[in-house]
Length: 271
Image 1 (cartoon, rainbow, N blue to C red):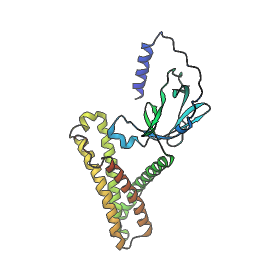
Image 2 (spheres, one colour):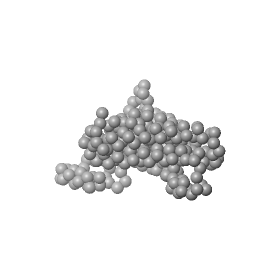
Image 3 (cartoon, one colour):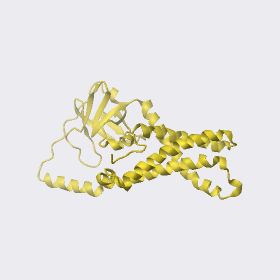
Image 4 (cartoon, rainbow, N blue to C red):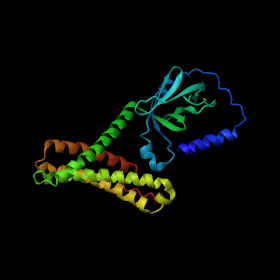
């Protein structure tokens, strides 16, 4: 990607050689009534529908300070600044290269579907509580998945020691691990298949079939984990194991419901 960007810069420099850079427009004031545009935004028009369920987590925060509009990422890191050029238009203020003279951001007139900003693509304003809830759910799922992977070696090792074998807890440990590993395998296949998406994902191939099977296994294993937890209520289970299983299984069920809503569980990319 870095080489591609350098090639593009070299071509643009060659095409525009000898041309005089346009002068920057005069500084303008922020338009009146702009404060309602401050807040959190999520992508509203992703380039690929297939990855929309992931792209929509790319939340950004828009706020205004020192007469400019600032866009930060989900974790609050200060990002890009934009200067007003008149009306509802803004131009980018890069830190290391000359600023472009044309506007690249537009505040779109609110309509029945909400408030939008065009920033390369169209972004939709979402309530702060909604953005916070999404962030909490994503972090909870990641913590659950990493904790399963972290403790799995200890569970497997303990299974070889006779005194530490606990058959009643076996399914509660194994099924979440199967779900997480299948999800990782599916993401790996998707990334590898994306290198030649039309040939590998647009047809029935090892990559597309693998994604179908791994996402299906993830959903089934997550549901089976909840069933195992329910059936284990009649057995003597250590309290910390039970509560850990409750937390992990809850995260897996939420993820399964989300993936199922977006048609990811058992997805057939070749269909």
